[in-house]
Image (cartoon, rainbow, N blue to C red; front, top):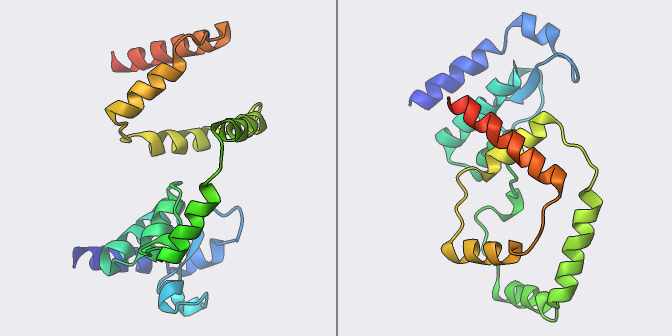
Length: 184
């Protein structure tokens, strides 16, 4: 009940004539939100739209998810927060035939071929700069993820004997200094 009341208040706030006039598809700082979502048959028509800031838009999808429990709302909320979501897979189970085909596709892949694929992927990302917001979202996505003791052991083994460059050690040192400075 409280989620519905908050959602309705948010929607009404965004329906003011002033916000409608300020909204532009790009550059106004406002986003158009369908009050009744697409997966429930909602369209981008004036009666079904409200204008929200990005933060309010995220909150709106979170509230819809809590109200309806629909995976599409959850996915919209997660994607707007920068978390990867695969809406086509939500709540679906693979058939035995599809499991068999996926298994066949993965058979025969050698560890060397996988290592080469990872190396190429790594090379393609080198030198690409990510903006502060992207780095923050990636960092947030990693928080709370727990590694098993076995995966920690394997990662440790993989890094033994590797030497880090002077620049890498300098960056790590600076990062830790900033971390401890914030903690007081």
